[in-house]
Every structure is written in C-alpha cells, then in structure tokens.
Amino acid sequence: MQKNQLKISEIFFSIQGESTLSGFPTVFIRLTGCPLRCSWCDTEYAFSGGQWMDIDAIIEQTKSHGTPYVCVTGGEPLSQKRCINLLNKLIDNGFTVSLETSGAISIANVNDKVITVMDLKAPGSNEDQKNIYENINFLDSKDQIKFVIKDRTDYHWCLEIIKRYNLIDKCEVLLSPVADVLNPTDLAQWILDDKLLVRMQVQLHKILWDDAQGK
Image 1 (cartoon, helix red, strand yellow):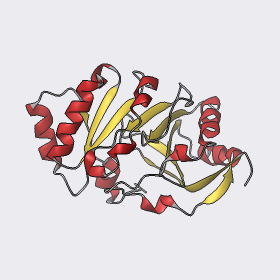
Image 2 (cartoon, one colour):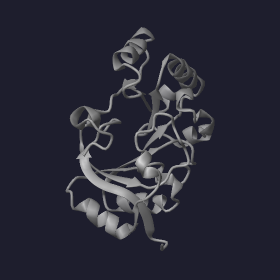
Image 3 (tube, helix red, strand yellow):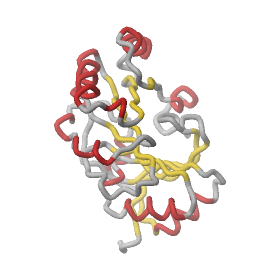
Image 4 (tube, helix red, strand yellow):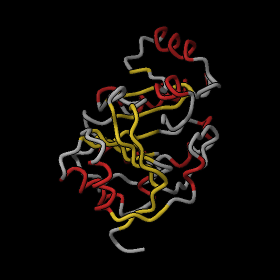
C-alpha cells in the first residue's frame, strides 16, 4: 500500500438510483470498509476484500465511461482517510461528485464542491448512537441528509431530528423506506398526512435491476 492508493470494492457504470441526481448515468466508486453494521445494510460485501488501486488509475477508469457524474460510496468511504484525496482529484478533473456517507465520521475536510449525501441513522438501523450531529454544521443547500425508515418508530424519530436541527431550511432532506420491510406507500402517506416538505425516494436501481448494485 502506498499513500496514493485506496482499497476499492468495485467501480461500475450505472443509473444513479438515489438522491437528487437520481436517474443520471453515473460512475460508482465503492470503497472497501465500514465501521457500522446497520441492520438493513445491502452492501455487506463491501466490508472487506477489494483491491488496492492508485488514485490516478481510479480517475482514468472513471473518465472512460464518458459521464460527468461520479458517486463515491461504500461501505463508508471516509473510513479510508485518502478518500479525501480522491474527492479532491475528481473535483479537479471537472466531475460532478457526490459522496454517500453514514454521518458517523467527520465530514469537516470534505471538499465544499462535493455534494455530500449524509445519512442520519434511525433507531431501526441499530446504529443511531453513531450519528455525529456536528456534521450538520458542514452542510449547505447543495447537500442532502438521508433518513432510511424501517417503521413508524423510525419515522417519528426522524420528525424529531428534522425539527430539532431545522434540517429542511438547511439542505435537501430525503426519506427512503427500508426495501422489502416498509411499504413505500405507507411512508408516502405519512409524509402527506404531516405535510412534511421532504423528498421521498425509492431505490430506482432495485426497480430496474432487482439488486443492490444497480448493474
């Protein structure tokens, strides 16, 4: 391992299935490793394995797909400190970069041109105690906070957090149902009943390909 390398689980080209960039052809760079073990995780294969790659090689492979949209994800990509170097280099190469992060690691050093899509883990994940709420201070209007909702308890917790931190005025707020656990129609109705000004989303890639990776 050298200082310009990252351990990569996979790099693939697909349709973005989540966030406000949903639907765009996107290169996904999935880094190996995650300190969390969410009860509903659908990318457990990224916890280990993968291969070391030079950041320059990652950039060249990303360029080969011919799209400006890049999503750096995991696992938890920020669990590898050199992820920051990758984000900076992608920005320097003119990509529109989104970062999918758990909210359990500081985002203070993330390039402010990166679109940060940060989870806040609800109780149903069994990892809500790992949330670093100070991270909210580093978000702005281009960024997004995502809640993955398992049940009504998670939803009510989400309402409390949105209110406590005034999130709707801070950035885009995304609510997603846990796939195959919470009926998306139920979540949609709760949002309507409460007139909650959030963006509901389902995982488009699972609708298209019926898998977690969207390949």
